[in-house]
Length: 241
Length: 331
Picture 1 (cartoon, each protein chain N blue to C red):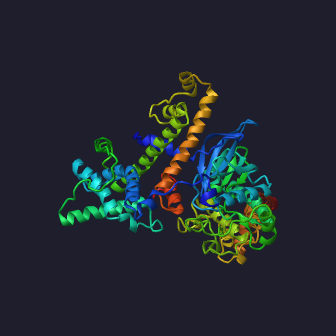
Picture 2: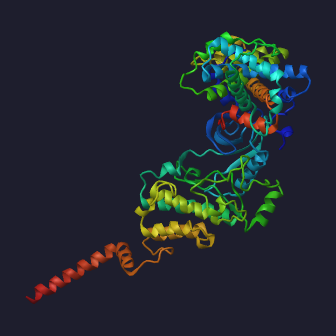
Picture 3: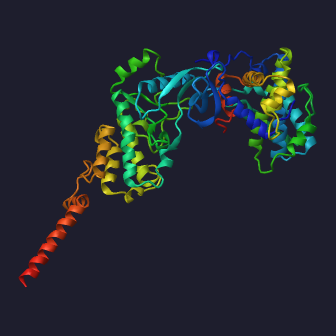
């Protein structure tokens, strides 16, 4: 079985490979996508590991992605040697150590990705992280959370485009709520004026699409089949190391 | 971007693993267990209205040949129709591309849990029943390669089932006939003999024979005899061989000898079949001499006394009474 005839066709292009391109525009766009997936884990990681205050941590996170574009850090990334997220974490540590050594802060933002990063929200989330958690596991956990969140965005866009927002809303109410007890199929059927069998069928459809979105998202964020498989296993909690 | 709580992330992680049973006759009830290459799910067969167990490959399998291996396991199970091997009902590929097979759902306990509080004779009888399906599989040219207490189930009616044939393969000594029959249906997985996708040796430490640990390609049924010996050690001591040094010293000598013979480093020095090993333990149960243990004269007398204690006591009592009668009669 190859990646082509695996459970899902792996057709999406890897942004990691695009981020290693010599074309500055392509590289910036790819790093913007990487930044969307990694800025939260990195922000919380430096807040926790280096005990930076929120403002400095936000500046540092932006500077890091600016460095990814300008210094072409990612060119030295080889998926055969390790995972992208481990590589990025090591780069974060190195950048921080270099800044400490040079005792200078880089200018914020210049040349970095242009996506908007909501550091205030990230800070509110950070306040709920248990102090006993180590920075590395916080980084990994945040990465899992971000992959799922980005996949949900993708799923919502697919449902909107195909006129299946009822499916998505059912999924949100049934699977994405902390409420306990969660609504029953009967309650959902009444709320959306559907038969109960429709509710279960719609949920089955949207869950299937969600699985596909997660794997697509992961495919984009990895550089090789091997890395994709390793990250998928980690994401699904099979072999988290 | 919607922020997700830890509990929702955990729920989504679980959701990702749920097999897509769309278009099949099954619906998921709950997750039962995780294995090396996939998970076992309790499912409802919607046509026959009965519970079954589905073994489903992981959504993203770590190695490319796992789908073929799962199907190979299913086909081996299909060939092992024996009361001691869990029956298989169905196999195929799900809508999400994952290979699966459907088998009987066995409600019961693993051997490890079942033997707690059981007497020695009950344990030895169980061992004999574990040996039966093994002998059957060996006679058909298949070896289990992952025999351990967790892979033996005792059902609600006392049935003994050897489970998880995921590492099973054709024995080196009879590989030609067994493998050729299997490979008519599916090519046997190449390179899966000893290394997984992560490059680890297949099997479970403590229950693996030395030749299996060393990655030998010439494994035969005697690797399972070693594991059966290790299971006997577990039954006698409550721990896997080597876990608690000298734990077997509490076991009767003949049974220790049975364990030592079954777990000999040289396969030629082991019992040459699971049935022969079981027969030796049954001999011990019946008070007969154990082939693995050459007893001395005193031990033989002791064993004979134990075996015929009632008769010996009756005869002794009779002789004593007779002697007393004669003594008093002379006075």
